[in-house]
Image (tube, rainbow, N blue to C red; front, side, top):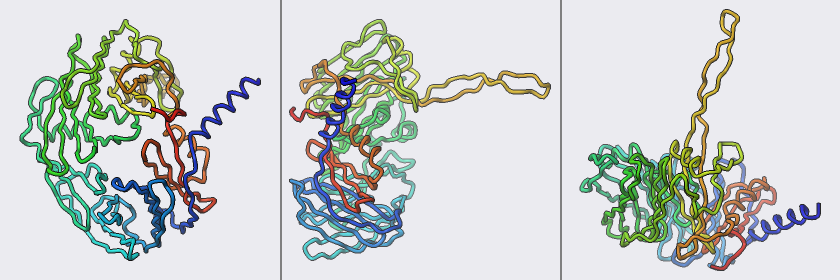
Length: 463
């Protein structure tokens, strides 16, 4: 009994050590919850932290320095309430922020530039038609706000750029590039995106496995964009886009052939490396390549009769709403994985690199259901049910990309999820990666204040 109590105390103390209150600020947001917003935003040049908190009438701006001490606070009237969303933000050279208030489909945007010195604001209205376009995502890079859209019926992406009260529209033309499917047949850019829509990857945060199983991934990097395609099981096709010149460079990374031609494959970009994963019922191939040179850093082949030597966790199968179940052999793991969408994610913690490999999707189960017929007899009806399923294992590597044997400590996202679950007063959460930790900013609806908390991965801060 003493051991159980001691274990509980240790777990609870580790959870408390993983999170720290960084700042609080008295704040009362008025009613009409649909108009409330909180956004944490970093000026990526000065590393000052800004908090934008609004209700139906007022926008409050809190400015913290890079040590997260409150420097100043401001209040401004909120713009038109028909603009229910803050789509993004930017900063000018004077460190004055702009917020992009919009309706749900981004067709109406009001860019409000806030002059913090004179405590005035300047709105600019934009009408966005998106004619024959589909909005893919919006993002911030280098203190600039972007909207990315796909041009329908053409092999082009459209990039809308917002900064300093100006809007630019740039075209990313992919019509000169060649695309092929796994059968070496020519296909075009539009066909790929119809079958494999673009998934935005959060490059400095933990991404769940379902994002890693998407075939077309979009990464926002420093002063550049990266688009990777894995519709072809023979290679990863990458397009590097310079945000200054909008020049597009193509790179190709062949995938190792397997004994069985029919395979599932995917890739993941992380810190100038391409991680490739290929699998069928007979074997699994895992490779790490240098993104700049395509040189192979690591190549691991595992057959169905082998033990996966580089795994750091059991082989798990998890059905939605249930606890994970261990699959005892590689063969069982592969036999389940081939019915799903295969993929992987890579995440760097303070002292290791966590790689999750597996697949997500639906597995179909059949059930016999007895029904009463018109002749007072029972008939057996076969009913099929699709169950969301994840099959995966985790692997831990050091910064030299050598596998290490250690247990994976809880991640900051795990601690944040637990904290939100246990604290019903947390509303309007805004999570941002800052330096080497996470900040959860939220409105405490009971205490009527803004609270900023720090969460770390695991318990060891050294790397």
